[in-house]
Image: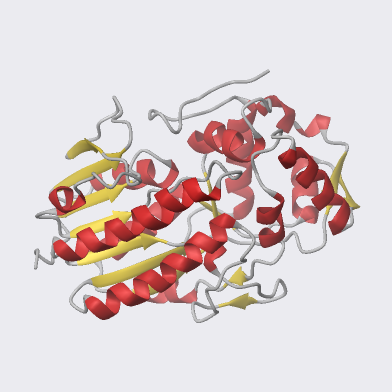
Length: 342
């Protein structure tokens, strides 16, 4: 078994939204000896103490055991959101690739495995009160994202049984945003050709108020801090991560100066389904169905056991993200590259 100091860290998906924030934190962490970032494309950006490896988790030829040898902790963040029209492709990367990560972590005898699960792993739940980590994680079966996250919860159950000496942590964050992720998330959910400047408040005279559309958000840097605390702690199990307050049409309307207008759920879904079917919108109607059913999360365990609290409110997170959308903001890696449209 590797050492318990957490000094040698491997991060999969290190060039993405969470990966860049976590890698920066670890580069400044005196307790961290080295970081190896795994990504499909090696970036020019290179924080202190960080080395890179080009690895495609979807490939059966990827030698993950070699990448993990000598590591104390593996943080698994890598995830593909697209193409939503080809769930077999995302399954190969997200599920089969993740299982390869788990198996390699066991074979390399790392001390800890920190896995990026999600609020999307949870079964449908309440919007009026928050649930803790004991809420069932069966996902929403029609949405590939939720189906994959839920499946990996079961895979981790098996991994923990087979590798009792590995400390396993499952992070279940809310929707994660930061300024540098604006261009990437616009492309993933809104499409390559949706101009970011359309997010200006003066262009939104009204805001659709859809029943059930009440979610939680979190700044990516706050999520990365929770990952850092989990790496160094002796905790295991699942942790909900979310900012406050929950976001709904009333809150967004106040932020944007737009009047919420009630829109029936079937009408909103039909519009999204039509745009998705014509390949005009990358976010699927199945994900829309799931979002309307996601429970609100209680983060008491993270506060108590990790001594973690988000530094930014939900309103501050959304204001920063919208500012980034309007300006085509991005980061220093290929996934986060800034691209303006329109």
